[in-house]
Length: 286
Image (cartoon, rainbow, N blue to C red):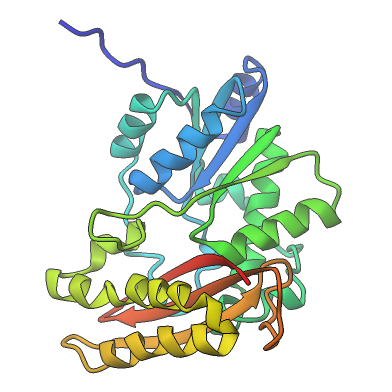
């Protein structure tokens, strides 16, 4: 008989978190909104490499959801999340209520600046202000030495890094590569919304990025043209893929690259299939 997997400690309030955090040494934080999947497991695995203990936060942050978005239906299953954390050797899970994270109206927020006003920021006004505000609060509460974020949310990752730099936060941000399901769809909690037919259509996102990456020797125009051809075909599929944006940006500034750009870049796509909005990206070096 195998020994039972020890459950992580669970803190539901900032007070419990402070007490339990004081028993840990060097900590790596993995901020999540729960509904943990293989992508989150990869973040936790990366965190284990950098610290004595891993803390996972589970909090569906209302500040980053706009009107008509999926805040109410976002998947929530804390028991399942705790089981995943136990399997991955997490020391502590912080799962606060909205009232504990925002005991009053959140008047002061982190301004993401111009880098947060493009792409995801343009399609989801206020989104990055909500993200950076909650990440700032989590850093203050957990006091991590390391924080691990996924490359799948590339613009979010870049903005967190910029916030840490600009506000002199004593945290090292580590990026973990995008995890993909066996069919190459980027792992996401929102994948659970997709019907089998919608999922087949959604595979066009990763195909488009692969086509763009394969055309990288042709420069920015060729990269975007190759990716757009795949998405144009997917727009005629059943169900169709409706693209919000396809962009090739400088990895540091998230401004669109010039035709003669040399260096690190990111090819990004955001699209809707049915009621589900998905994002994906691939880093490139030109």
